[in-house]
Length: 266
Image (spheres, helix red, strand yellow):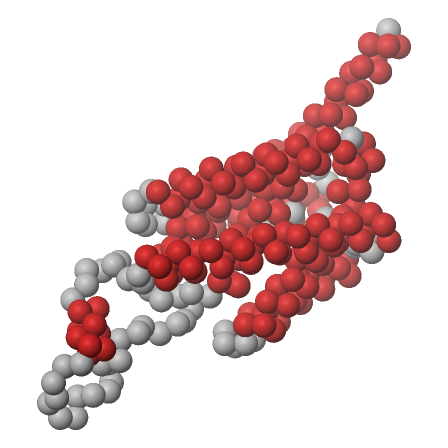
């Protein structure tokens, strides 16, 4: 299970490239454009623009999570999840990145399609949790939401670029995780090695929650307000963490159940 990671609105200054053919009295737009050039690095976009962009990102993330929940429900009800839904999810994401940024509606629906197919792809794990103990699924989701909120707040209140150095470490860790899974697919793995991959992957994607949040903030400072792409990045982090927490909780619950059965037999 590996996740994933993770450009464009122009500045509002009308003075760049226009209006310099002859000297004129500065208009309010020209004055504001000149003032924007004198702003210190990182002082734009305005707080209202940044707040609006952040609100769009997290609102879109919530809608994507709802679509994913619908996909998981469809698998539980109709057993549609599998390799085809996973390939469909990858295809939807690739299509989304190929669509121009200004076609927001099309990109939004592609995001919802990818989220729904992702939910159907993890549907077998969701169904296993529901059949074993529904409370495990609720606890895993709440725990993931709390972790996401805490790590997101830590990234937001931290100094600018403070956690961006984690990008190289996280990329290296993700590469190691992929190689471990590749080796396991060839040589097989024990329960211990599988759980190591799960815990190691959980650590990696918790780190990505912090890193991706700060990267989104930094991109917004440079005018990249592509909230659909940013929401997709955070969505993949959230699902990757949720899946691993769910696996860990199911493993622990299964071990406790087996231990109780042994005690009863003895």
